[in-house]
Structure formats: C-alpha cells, structure tokens
Amino acid sequence: MHVTTLLLQAAAAALAAPALQARDTVTAVVDLSNNTGTPLHLASGIIYGEPDTPNQIPDNFYSGAGLNFFRAGGAQLQAPSRGWIWNEYPGRFQSTLSNYCTARKYGGSFIVLPHDMWGTDHANSSTAWPGDGGNWASYDAFLNQLISDIKANNMLPGLVIDIWNEPDQPIFWARSEQQWADLYGRTYKRFRSDSSLNSVLMQGPTLAGAPSSSNTWWTTFMKYIKANSTIPDQYVWHEEAGGDVQVNHHAFTGLLSQYGLPALKTGEHQVNINEYGLFTEQVSSATAWYIGRLERLNLFGLRGNWLNGAQLHDFLASLVWRGSDGTSGSYYPNGNWWTYNYYSQNMTGYRVGTTGSSDGKFDVYATVSDKVRVLCGTRLVTGTWELTIENLSAVGLPSSGTLHIQTWGLVDKGHTGEVDGPTNRGIGTRSYSGNSVTFPIYQTAVDNTTAWAFEFSV
Image 1: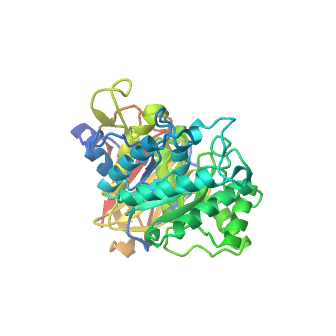
Image 2: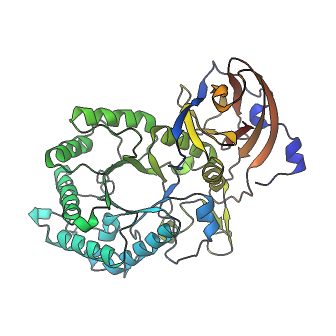
Image 3: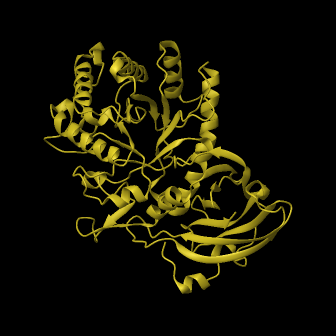
C-alpha cells in the first residue's frame, strides 16, 4: 500500500461529516461472533485472460490478486485453430493446455470449456451440431480425443469440465433443450465411465438465465439429472444480466426441492458462478458488492471477461493493462486489481457473518485476524448507508469504548486506468456502546466506483 503524509492527514471520506442526506437506516451488518470459516477468497477467479505465451504477464499480478480459479478452451482463435468442427482442434487444445499449466503454477483450479474446443464461435448455418439426427459419432470422437489429451498431458489435478457453456444462448447452442440435455448426459457419463477421471469435477447446466421455475432450460435440466442420475459436482449459472445472485440462489435452492434433488450441503462449495459482473460493474465498488454476496453464500465466482480476439487471451480479464492500446510496454494494475489484492492478501484469519443492506445495493465481507477487516461496496449507486459491526466482545474488545478505525479507499479509474494502490483516507475515532459500533458510508459521485476497507485492531 502506498501511504503519504498528506493522505495520512486526510479525513476519512467514508467516515467524514455527511455530504448526503442519510437514508432511513439502510444498514449492512457484520457479526463478529459468527465464525464462518477460513478465507478462501471464493470470488477470485477469471474466465480467459491468461496469455497463451507462458510468463507473459509477471507472476506478481496473478499471485497478488489471489487468482485461484481459471476457465478457458481456446475461444476466438482463428485458422488454423478454429476447433474440432473445422478439423482444427490441436491449436485450441494447446491454448487450453498452456492456460491450464499457468493456472496450476499458481495453485489454481482450471475449468475446461469443451464448447470452445469444439468450435461454437466458428459455427455457421451448415454446421452439424452434436446429436443432429441422432448422430453422435463426431462428438463421441471429440470427447475421446479430449480425454486422451487430458491424460497424456497430466491435466487431472485441479481439473473441472464445464460440459457446455450457455446453451440457452443461440451463439453457443443452436438446437433444442432436449438435445442439449442429451449432450450433457452423454458427456457426464463418458467421463464417469473412466475411473481414472474420478477426480475431475463436472459442471452444469451453465445457463445464462437465472434459476427459475418458469425457465424451461432449468426445468428441463432438473428433470433430466433427476431421472438419469447425472447430478453435477458443481451447479453453475451466470450473473451477467443485472440480476442479484442472492435472490437467484434462493430460487435455485427452491428448484432443488421442487424436483426432489439433494439439498446443498452446509459448508461445501456446490455452486460456481463461473461468470459474474457486467462490463460496467467491473469496478472496485461493484466488485466488493459481488464479493460480499458470493462469500456469504459460499459460492465460487469467476470474473466475466468482456474483451474479444487477442485481448480475450490477455489482461487477466481486465485486471491489468499495458501501454496506450494494450500492445506494448509493461503491465500495470488497475483499481479493480487492488480490490482483489486487498481481499486475498489482507483479509486473513477467519471469516465472520454478514448481512447486506435491505435495499440490496450495499454489501460487505469481513474477516478477523490481528485486526477486524471489512471490505464493502455498492452496486454502482451513490447514496448513504450504515455499517454496523456487532458483538465486539467476541474478538476481545470491551462492550463499550472507543475504536480507531483506519479507512482505505480502493479507487478505480476504469479498465485501463493505472492505480498505484489503495488510498489512505485516515483514521477515524468512534465511540461505541452496547457491544456494537455503527457508522455511515457516504458513497458520493466523486467516489462512485470506490470500494472501502475498514480496519481496527483487536
């Protein structure tokens, strides 16, 4: 962190005198008595973003952001690497293998995307899709080749298979729901028929649409996996349509009950939101909002990637950039990278329970070690909220007294805007009683994309 004398003297913006009219106590809560386990920075994943050239992006940008889940399959590569349907599979596999090796270098899990290796991005009106006319021969050969290559290249550790990405989007699947369900089951059973692949996790349904009893892609999937005993190791959907993962997760658990499927097991990570965040939401404030929700629900999350072409295979899904146009010069971090850095490197010890604001626009994540640390942000809105930290005695503090709270601003200057580190907004003194402390969060237009980190010693 970069701290200057001037900044140390600055008033903490989020704890300063009110700049906006306070709301009617729209409050987020941290409960220090509720230990929710070891921090795993569940939201620190990315889709694509790894260069196919090893070591192109320096190590510190991977490790400093705590990246631990990666997802790729050679998408958007051109001839001679357009995928299986063009008899150009090898280039896509080599891209995938390179990305897998990079992920494992940093201890990350890696999700393979068969639909990209198959070549959906180069499909056209004459393309024969898997299962057309009941013919699965080419797809079966594709799976056999993929499995053979996975084994030959020692890719089993940390491997996850995302059976087919966003079949509810015509660009990725141009056939019926039932034909997709059959593809899902065929792929699942092919992997599970080989005991040497037992460690490989299977994902599905990977829909763009949120879980809902009125979404026929979801209901078709639920009926199919129940009838055919093909329940995925990790259920997947995407949060890139402006919905709320907390609301959608509740709907998902309702679907499990409705279709007689096993309930999620407490403490296990059986849901992976392997794409989250609109392009406009890839700023510090909204990232902190997503982190708060994903951590509370115990969901893995991978940051979406809105870049195209060669840029898709670079820049860690818009966490780093270089030069004026991204083609030359040294890589540098943007503000969002520093949010993931604080989240993964500073927030150690154990997690504690949280509740987001009742309006759904402000959320928090908190840990306890030598300090209580709270990361919070809004979903691209300005206004005033309150943050309550309760049960202070659970970390050895008196039930009344004074806290000296350090504030850090995790500023954001856009996807390509270089940021040197969190800004020190000073130390605010707060008197408290009743075993809790409450203070306002002022999200002004000046700091609309800023996330906030608060710290005090225990």
